[in-house]
Image (cartoon, rainbow, N blue to C red; front, side, top):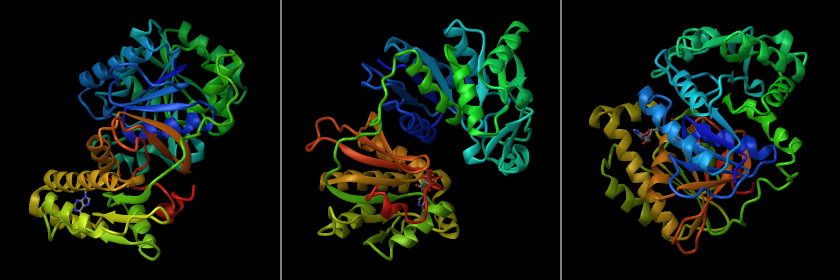
Length: 422
Ligand code: ADP
């Protein structure tokens, strides 16, 4: 039975959290969408929803359903994971979902901590910084879906909940776990429902995590999760594990599928071109998923190998993306490429690919759906936030696929090469 049951508001955020838990000694499985049926064995289960920008009522309903499944499986603590830039609007969904979870858990108080100093997200006097810039001057103020125009998280969260929001400031956090616990008690007794907590070092995150032992609900980014596994070890519930990230031995041919047009991915393709076979699809010249699949199938003939990967990419620079969007419309352009890449993924697996890297958040979603994957066991990280994972592909022969799902802008330039030596 899982000790920690997590609900993440998007797919790559779920993976990021899962990788953090594995790195701190909990075996972890990521479940895609609200789980139906029994959950796989693991110390932590992370349910990946797509609720960040859904209507608040929908996000609440899905999160409650996920919570129900996690509680039924025996989870002792629920973790609500959102982005380290607190991506949300005045309509939600952090406040409404946290309110609903607290009510379900019959609890009246939770921490809200997006800080992750190692990734440049720190909170000071309740204000969230991205690097040296206030959140509201970090570029996030221009986000198309969740523009963050106020860096004061006490104010931001207050606008999303009827519960009171207080602050545990730096001076208290700096004193450590006991002082933090006392501050939590004062806030709770003073009628506050949430505590925004300052954190500018990893030691702060560990102390905050320890102070959340016994809380029914913890909310935050993946950073605050680093202190939670130790709580379960202290309670004698979690054995010391040196192999929490162990996966079955990799097998089969190696391939990379890229549908991200982000700068990092374009650079990764550029470097891969010098070392391994690369097929660059041109959806503008061939705006047809079946034809793109046929082209890829003909190309992969005789090229698939267990010694080095092949790369198949639809990724293109901004002017080419704009041209296809102009020809087909934004939605249809994305959907066409996603459909083609998802079908190519199935073709690769059918031809013996057992190790697959997918670049692009939406692209990863399309591939995982097409391959019918419901759960991913989380393994070692290749680069920060991108672990190898293992999917048991039911009924397939041979069963099991190693997958690395990379958010477009993640990973070093040699990611597509080093992934297969990791
Ligand atoms: P990221 O993680 O970088 O945002 P995503 O996969 O989430 O990557 O989004 C990239 C989107 O761009 C996908 O919908 C994909 O289908 C689309 N796309 C990929 N290649 C092209 C292209 N050549 N022209 C237009 N759209 C493309």
